[in-house]
Image (cartoon, rainbow, N blue to C red; front, side):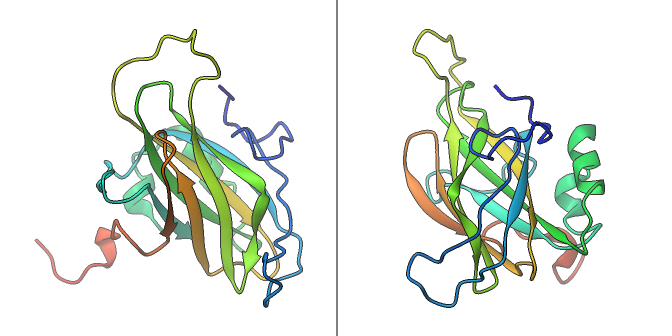
Length: 192
């Protein structure tokens, strides 16, 4: 698997970096023509717990638009992931965090298809896929595995929403949007 550092100039399709593409909207409707660049950072195990049901959805995503946002999610992240977040210039970029699931321990990375990546009507859109072993000769642990990745999105204007087509490790695809699924407990009314 890739080292996940996002620094080797990859195209963002193999989980090891990215240079993104501009979104063409597919239907010619109100698409932003600005260049979108991306950098991917593999997170490893899902940070949400995971707090969503794999039988009801293909994954979970959240848009991080400012420093300190989503601390409920990132406080227990590995040091390299926290450093990636801290290196983000939120005046020029946003982060999209995505989780999904696979049938074994070899399905442990999320990759992004740079050809469908872009900003449409203020929404970052992309296709994300849980990647498994490249060969049947690889021994994998028999455990459902939740994986996660961050993608840094740089564009002008910045997206204010995210919509991802996520394909899990069983090959099932569904759409996930920021704001759906796992709530930020710091933003909920009330207390304990």
